[in-house]
Length: 285
Image (cartoon, rainbow, N blue to C red; front, side):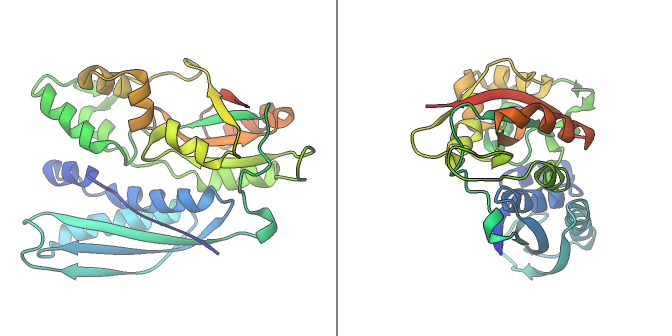
C-alpha cells in the first residue's frame, strides 16, 4: 500500500474571490492520486477534510461534488471525510481543504527509478493549465494586470483558464504501465521506468527526484508548445524560463521515463488513450 496526501494551496483564494467552488475538489483528489500513481500504484480510496468558520451548504456541496467527480474520474472510492466548523478560525466564505489517497501495487512492480539509465527517453504529458501550484504568483499577476487581463486564454474565458482543475492521469497512465511494464534490472531493462508528477518546484525539481544519483534529464527547449496562459503569466510576472520551469508545470503535468526502444510505441499508446504527449528530452550523465 502507498499513500499520497495534499491540499489545494492558495488556488482556494481565487475560488473564494470568484465564487468558483466546483472544481477545487477535483484538484484535491488529483494532487493525491497522481502522487500515488507515480509509484505505479492504483488508487483505491480517498478521504477528505473540509474546514470552515461557518458551514455554507451550497459551497460545501459544490466542493464535495468536485471531490466525488475527481474520485470517479480516477476510479477511486470516496469512502468518507471530515467536516469541521471552527468559528473565528476562518473568515466568512472561506474554507480549507486537505485529503489523502491510498493505493496498491505489487511490491515487485513499484516504480523507484533505480533502473533509469543514459539514453532513456523523457516524455511529457500535457497539463490542464496551472493545476494547483504557483498560485501565489498567479494572484500577483492578476493584481499587477488590474483590469487589463485578456478576455480569453487558449480559447477559454480568463477565469476558467486559471481555475481549470488538475488533470487526472490515473486511468491513462495505468493502462500505459500495463502495456509497457517495467521489466528486468540493471543494464537490460525495458518499459516505463519512472514517473514524475510535476507539482511544486516544477520540471526542475520534480524530475531529479526519480533519477538515480549521477544522472540528469536533458530537456529540449521548444519540444512542447507554450500555451497562451503560460505566456501571459511569464510576461506579466517578468520572469525568465528557469524561474517559469521552477514555479509552474509550464504545460507538462506528468513525466514518463521509458526505454528508448519503446518510446514511440508508448507515445502512441498514450495518444490513443487521449493524452497529449511530447518527447521532451533524454536521460544523460
